[in-house]
Length: 443
Length: 163
Image (cartoon, rainbow over all chains, first blue to last red; front, side):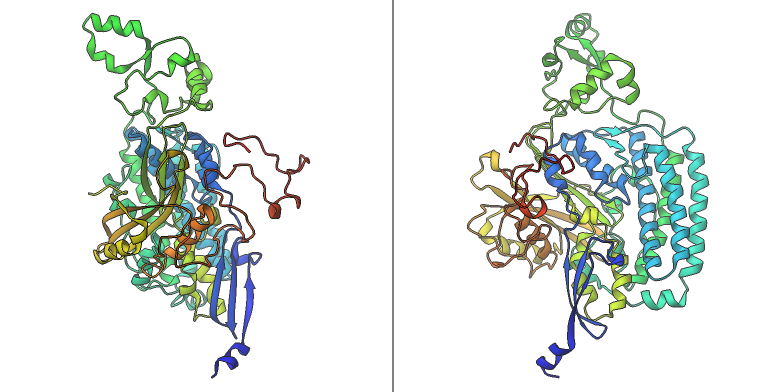
């Protein structure tokens, strides 16, 4: 067939951004020969909200609510990732209980992320029942998140130096009841989908990705694991308390859509196991770094004169009654003062003057947490893979630069590789299994 | 247990970025994890931007990360000296487009590079430090490019970067 004959046979088709399976935010320009995809061009940016630019104009703590809007299906993981990156930059460590709470929060989010992905792609393949089962399970988890953070999606749960609050008193019982429901929904969906002829025909062998391609395109997360590479940030670089927990990394073998579906289902079970272990293991204690006790400088001096030196480290000197004096660095050797990094608890802010002043100081322009000039990179395992934050501080009270490495951008960049040569109908399951979340893709 | 996600921080001359990267790739750094840019406008550095390559040595058999490198290349927006790493890692394609889009740093062998997130008519590069926070552009705002007086139109508050 000559080139001219072929070019007459192909035609261009715009898919999205209004196409329902493109979720309203991605445009594919397809070149088709009949129903076969000859070429594809992906256009993104429809949901660009200048996250990185906004972050540069906020204080360190004020960026946390913006991170909710990155991957809005698993906002808690973004909160944790950002807060841990800032803590790495400041050189501080959160108390152990706080770390357990963060792991619990992240794993709940991972489950909701996977449930949404599997549910939505099943619905796009015509299986509305499965979608309803899984969204029902997700709804229970959202109620749990609501219970924990006060919001279903815009959680803003972490603070630099800790979390917003401790677990609610009946959290463990509630979780146990909900975990049962989630497992039931998964079992039901598994029965409906996993050996379903129609589902398998659409998923098996489509959107195939080799290990070499996955590495070349920088793909991480369930997408990489479905090709058989067990890379997981939680295992490779155990952050928080993942090193103390027992979990498996499910991997696929062929790297097709079906494998990605199986990987996600298996990961949900692992996440539930992780939360159960956390609830058993977590110690009592403080969930956040707390402002140190403040004493007047002369009192500290007196204590020193009386030989009472072991208590000195516990106190921060209050130099002057004015705000200017309060913020003077009384221990220049420490990188950041605790008092100046953690927002006091809401109970403290609303009930006593020290808490209120402390809070007020931290949220005032140019008075907030100051971090010495430095750069860092920190990553957590997000729902879609390695969610990294590259932070630059210039010594101010807010970031000089925040770079978010969006995990779902990398498989999106490989769309050409995934789609060319396939049928137009394969676009739906392949795009679904990427789990493109425009909030983090476009930022 | 290696918990250093940042890895080895190195610098390379912008003119030889491709050689350095291919050498690193030959050493086993098989994955381009991320690529970004920082605008050091107020830092008084000899070159305004740092383009940062983040590489990882991934062992496919065990799935473990065997080490990382963060490679900094100092450049100015003009002239374009960096060479594209697209041929080493296809992942670099979109990342380079984003760097051009947001910072205005071009790659010598990609003269016709397309923006990634913004539309082609967008003037300027939003993540440059001297791009004003509240600036409006005609295609997404009123035709004249001026701020609308109507309260229903997103009213801009003055920011510390000023306008």
